[in-house]
Length: 161
Image (cartoon, rainbow, N blue to C red):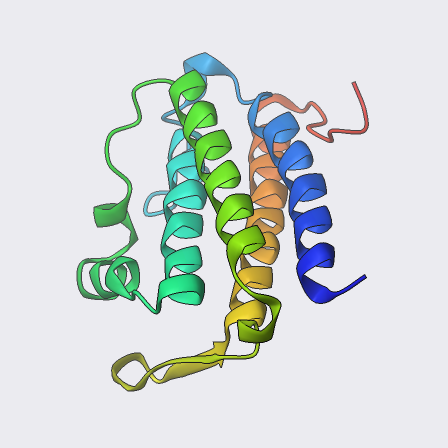
């Protein structure tokens, strides 16, 4: 299995877990957050899909526009309005499919190409940047699970009902 195949397999598994956790967010508590200045439960979903969209554009196209906005204006400027959890879950699915399509079409011999942005003092191989999408989703999946536990006392694991 090459790294592209590994990414596609891991991304699909991560997506299932992410959707399972986000689907457990109480619809009437989208505006809840444990402390001022933190993302709300509802804001977690647009954050992960908008970030994923921005990151795959860096990896595939060398397009840094998402990070330019995020760094200049802050995370809240990238989120947009959360209208419904169902709408955000559809967007998570749409971006997931776009990422899989882009990664599948991206030639394996280009996965080592370096994407660099001196202004933000960052660089990395395109393939490594794609794998960061998975890590980011898992990080926020754990955060959503923790929020739900704090809020309801319930378990948010996709493995337990």
